[in-house]
Structures are given as C-alpha cells and as structure tokens.
Length: 88
Image 1 (cartoon, one colour):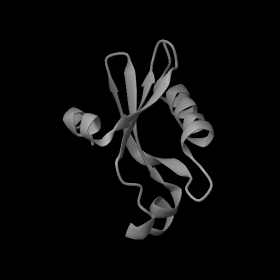
Image 2 (cartoon, helix red, strand yellow):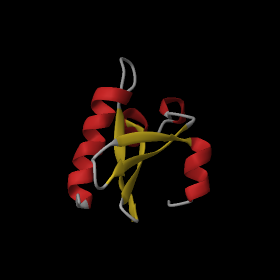
Image 3 (tube, rainbow, N blue to C red):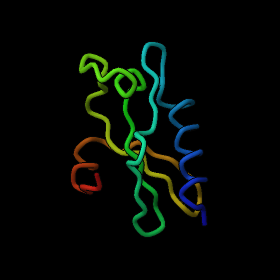
Image 4 (spheres, rainbow, N blue to C red):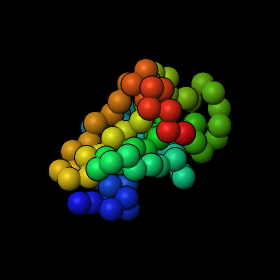
C-alpha cells in the first residue's frame, strides 16, 4: 500500500507525462489531497493559473486525479465525477 507522499509523486509524474502538453502544464494543488479507502485523490490545475491566478490560464473541465493505493495506477477524473466526490 502506498502512502500519500508516494502517491503524490506518482500523481505529479502522471500529470507531467500524460496530461501536460505544449502550452499547458499541470500541477497538484498544494494541500488539496485526500485518502478515501485505498485511493488517494489530488486536485490539479494549470501550473500558470496556480502561479499567477489569472482566470484565462485556468484548466476547465478537469477533475481530481485518483491514484490507486494498491497498484499506483493514476486516472484523471472528469469534473462531474469529481464534484460527486466533493472532497475539496
């Protein structure tokens, strides 16, 4: 079973390798993390928005990033699925 710090490293690596693209990099939102059962959830957002707070840099339509605490598998959830979890 992963701990939350190991899960955070996997989550950021997933964002860097699978989600970020030219023109928009993603980062974990500091302090927005939770464990539910064996899964870890992290809020993420565009790095530019987190740095500057400019609404035009905000990523819209994305949700939490889930890390399976047993397998380390990462999956970016949609906005609706994340809203239903209501973690942050």
